[in-house]
Every structure is written in structure tokens, then in C-alpha cells.
Image 1: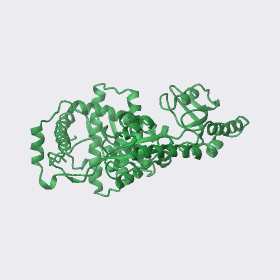
Image 2: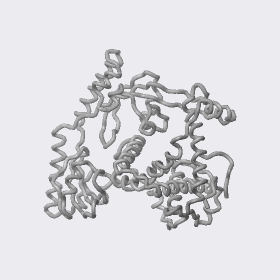
Image 3: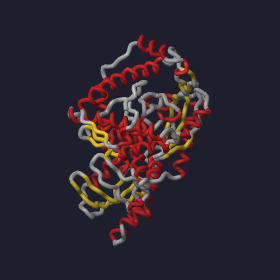
Image 4: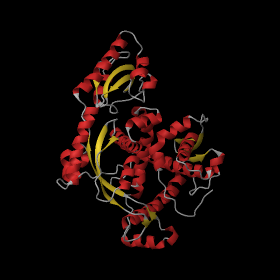
Length: 453
């Protein structure tokens, strides 16, 4: 069936793009038998492709009509596969470096939401490497599809007159409510790991390595002592990976090993490792490792806290500007822009409440614009801890959108509607020329916007 009322802005859902590995995990718990439900060009759509995303939808707390939601997900997957088919026909390419960069960007976003890399690994019971392996093919296909989609809309533009006409056309009860948005700056200082702390971790791992050399099981000792939460319970096994996904020092040691060989102690940003090669297959290897992390001592934490307290007093008393303090003392790259924090999801310095780590958001909510917080300890990426001082630069109040105040947002929506029309025209044209078959009877009865067969 075809539904023609209204315009749906087709996109590869952010939920799908960002949480595919967690939905795969959710689906694996259901023990549902998989099957092919549709074919687009040479690409199959599996029942799990729909069910994975539906399960993730439920995990977000939504409880709307099951059939309607699954049909909407299915139509988005049909669109994604149509884009992918076009990318394959046009020999569109995406480099491995681009895929790795996009994976890192998305994982950085997840880490910022959940609090730390360690918490992310514990939540999914997977190492970062395993999460990346789960995401790699999906992200590669999504990036190919996005290139095609961008080509469809790259020449679509909109004039100020069209923006005004669009805003005037909105019924009063359809004018959106703009929620609060935040802009903030930070000064970050990471406590230094002292030589004696590094020596303690290294000495501990040397003892474990000696036990392995003397015949004890690598897997058992990994379960007992490894501080990598994603792999410890798997006997330290990381799964297959190629070059470019691990720490350089780790890769250099791992790829130099022969099957069954044990590495010397290897130091990385995470701490100290010993590695055992399980197998090598082409450009991929599978290894076990035991990680002993270098930990920050209470003394180092106290020294850094006192330093940050001094910086806070200088800024609070007006003896040093926040921007100058960020430039001279902050460990973060934002120091070069006065400490202004950039939203990795949008590339701007504007955040919605959902895009801010919860503990930080609660602090910002209690602050006045221009106020500077006292130093607080937080979990940084890569399991590190750091202190930060935060300044709330701007907080907008919730309000109904107006043409003058929210022109940029209205323009973006109007442009998206126009792009959606261009995408819709493309779908109608390409779906007629592409081999598409819907096999599943339940999905055939969906109330589609477009005619897919």
C-alpha cells in the first residue's frame, strides 16, 4: 500500500546509525530465527535488520503501535539499501581511514554520554575493539549510502523568501517548541601518573608473565588479573582485528608474534600489556592480552586538585581571564579557542540537554550564565580521570519558534523539507528501475509512503 499524505523526511535514523551494535546485542538475546524479508538490487534485508532496530526503539522507552513502528523502520531500511545499491552501481568508495575516523567520532559521542570508555565496555560486555568490529561493516555501508544521498541533495538550496513562506505556512499549533540549549567552556587538567605508580603496575605484570612462562594458563590469569573489562572474562581474547585499530605500540608487538608466542611487556596509554598470538589470517590476527592499568595515586589527585583550586581562585577573583587560564593550563585542545567546548555530534558549540553528560548537565542547570564552577573530578575518555572547571556561557529558555529569533533553525527545517522532496522524487524514480522484492507477507501489508514493488 502507498500513503501519500504528508512529507516524511527520510534519513538513516540516528538511532540506527549510533546504536547498531547495542541493538545487535539485544537481538542476540531473543533467539529469533533469522530470515530474508526483502531484496533490493543485490542486497538482502534480514528480519534481524528490522527486529534489531525495533528492540532498540523499545529500549528507549517508546511503546507506540508495534506494526506502524516496524513498518517505518522497514521503509527506512529499504531506502538505505536502495542508496547502497546505487553506491555499488556507481562504484562509490569510502576509505578505511574515513570509516575508522567515523567510528572514533561515534564512540567518542557514546563515551561522553555514558561517562567513560570503561563504563561503555562494561555496559555492553565488549571491548572497544569488539564494538568497533560490530560497527565496521554497518558504518561502511552507511557512509556509502550517505555519499549517494548527499549527491541527490547537494544542489538543493533555499532562499530567505522560501524560508519565510515555509514558516508562514505552518499552522499555529504546528510551530515547534525550541527547548533549552547550552554553550559552555572548560579548563581541564589531568593528574600525572608518577614513575613509582608505573613501576608498580609493570612489576605486577612481570610476575604474571613469569607465571605464564612457568606453565600457568594465560586464559585463567587473564580472567583473574586483567583490567580490560571487555576481554578479561573471555580469557583476554580480543577477536580478529587488522592494523589501525589498536594502540600503535600494541599493534607493533602483536603483529610481530608467531602463533602461541608470548610478547614482552608492552606499554601503551592504557597501561602495560602482555600479548599472546592465537592465530593469523591474512591481514587479521586474533590475540589474548592481559592489561594492568597504571593508576593515579591519591597524592597525584590531591596535587592536581590544589593546582586547579588556585586557577579557580585566580579566575573567580578577576586576576586571570577564563580564556587565558584555559590557554595556559588546560590539557584539552579547546584551550586554543578559550576553552569553548565543541559538540562532536554537530560540530557547533551548542548542546541540547540530551547531548551533555548527566553529571555535567546537573551542574550547568544550577549555574548562572557567566558563572564559573569550582574544580570537579570526572571520568575522561580512555579510562583517565581529570579535573575540570566549567563556565556556563549561554543558556536559552524554551520558547515557541519565531522567524526572527530562530531563523537559522527555521531555515534548516525548511531546507530539509525541500531536500526531502528531492529524495522522495529520487526514490520514486530509482525504485521503478531497481529489482525490489518484499518476501515477508506482514511487511508487504505496510502502509508505505512509496511504492517499493
